[in-house]
Image (cartoon, rainbow, N blue to C red; front, side):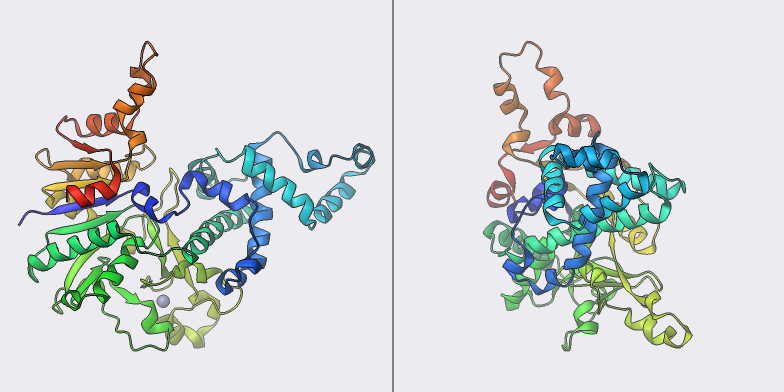
Length: 441
Ligand SMILES: [Zn+2]
């Protein structure tokens, strides 16, 4: 039976109003109602950590990506004149005091949200990763501070996702139909079949969440399960007092389930990993990656706690989040990612049809582009589902008065796909995922 592989990019998650990568920095610093106002216990658990992380990130942005220093945010002329007369040590002390003042910090955060939101995450993470990998310091930041900053960024990004999930309803009919069609295809192929799989470059749990929703609302689908293609463990089996089973993905098929492969190439917010034994824990209910950052009661690996609890420091068994951040120096070396990427390669190589949804083939994803190039055969059919603002004809209309429009359309997604795959018979759909699922799937 012929195989279809769906590749989901950021545009595929737009339907659920998640923060896009381009908006993450702005979202971290925009003024918003306090966690107290929304009274979310999960967010409140990390309130102090969040306050410190924002101070650290703001300082990094001001130091590396602006021509200002903190004293430029003081508008009182006479105060500034007085500061000028202070010795250096006194100035630093004063700065430390200022950083405790919410009003002062807010003025800096506002400046970053308004004037610095175009700084890309690729730039930030590549700089940090390069410094860590080459054991160098940057502009006064030593290695331990750089690692701290990197953690602060990851923490703030996960927190944004947790925050956005509070109001997510997961009732999009399009997504429900999309997942249901995939489950049906899988069941039609019978237990040994393998007609469809999903590769995602997103961290969110939209597919996971809709999948469990569809499965639990129809008893015909009760034997369908998501397959992350690693030997994984159900978080709720180990950490909640529930009788939920934990059946590792890699043995689902053997146990008679209809496995639907979901390959999360950049990791996921609903995963936690033990860096000691490399076991992966997943949840289809919540963004457990966030729990790494709980001030107290951060989850520990149940296996390693048992095996090594007599031999010393229990902190070593804490579970950690595992996200591949947008960087040009991606580290895909751990066992989990090696397995996932290897499986994704096989899926793409076996595919008769690959459907890219909301994915624009960015240069920064060069590892994935390399895999596409290696795996996809010349005869494989390719569908690309994008939105109106990617449509070159729409762009041409907007630019019809320009003499040479080629320079504007040379870098649109359509040109990128055609030149990358070296063929013209790629089907482009510019009406978005809703139209594609309703009319072309
Ligand atoms: Zn472990």
